[in-house]
Length: 491
Image (cartoon, rainbow, N blue to C red; front, side, top):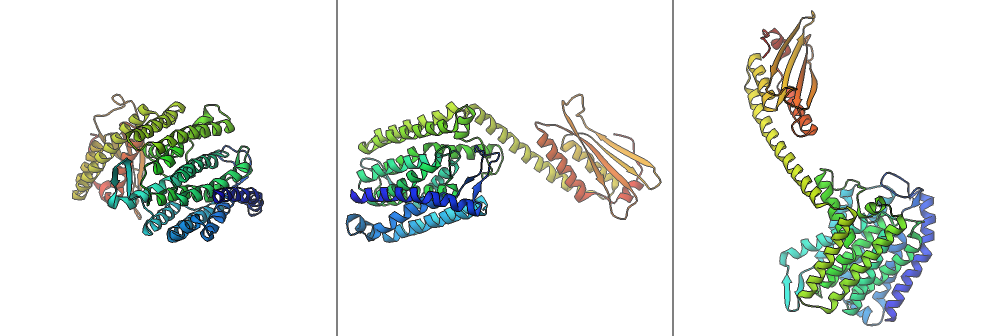
């Protein structure tokens, strides 16, 4: 027990001492987070506080390898896995630090996280089985490695995305570490206990400077390191103990960041944005929008996390179906919180899914129409057949009309027009586009004017206009040949 206390207190003391030095360093090198559209702070704040957390946690974990007691023996027997965990955590930390200082694409950070998780799987850190109830063991088989990678990467990014308010990520992660440490000591998972207590001490000391009003932010180097360490430590302990609570407690303690990440991914998918696109609709942003001050929004999330994680501790004394029921009920309570603050709306989500499906169907139909029209243009052998292909394009792409005006070098104007069944009287919205058609070394000036019926959305109309433009670009006839052709009456 003295080792546990020494690790926690030593890490806490180091973080308290190191954080002011990191604040000074950040200001010297310009590593500050300036106010912007996605931020809630109004002044530049140092953003590499993860250095203090990393040094204070790792600085107390490494010496445990050399202790002459039971904990030291356990660490030495698992030295390969522990060294790999510390090495990969350090890699994730340094990548986050580079991102804080210079900026890195999100895909690069994700690739590093996946690589680090795969390295852990390679040395045997993987979730191979789960004890669902007492006496029933679910073997994951070949799915163990990919699920472990998904678990580690998912938790890492959940913690990273939660770092949006002063003290939020650090406080929620500290609660998670404390609850997981209690479970680790109870179940004699010595490795997890040391890792969580060292991280808890570092986060607690850092939180003294990070709570509102924050003097420093942990940055990506801190949030990625903390999330990766929590996820990897829990996966490592599950290689020897298959108790479901080993995964359930991190899920419950980090329930708000996890669901917030899932809903953010769903939201961006429905809005057809990049999954890495910036967002200001997270759970904590919703609390701010409801009128809560930043400090009280963070405290509300702390309280919710403590309640969820505290209830989850009861799973330690239940090894039957009751533990699963309790786990499901707590998750439903967390989901209810998201519903209350408006971070998720079932009807709106279903409507967005329907709209996305309808848009996808329209795009497939327009693509098939475009491919069919390309064949018609390719078969055109003269100006008459080419104009018929233009008319077919107007009909297939649901245009109201297509007009082609040509003017020779003497100023003579010729016009040919195709009209469809859609008119301004039958359609509430019409989009018109002018498309100049020119050839090098030609004296003929020609221009298309197309009127596109708005079928569902302006985006669909614009896309059909773009498809028509592609057809004309790729399959336009010689302008002199077309101008020499007699212009028929308007159709």
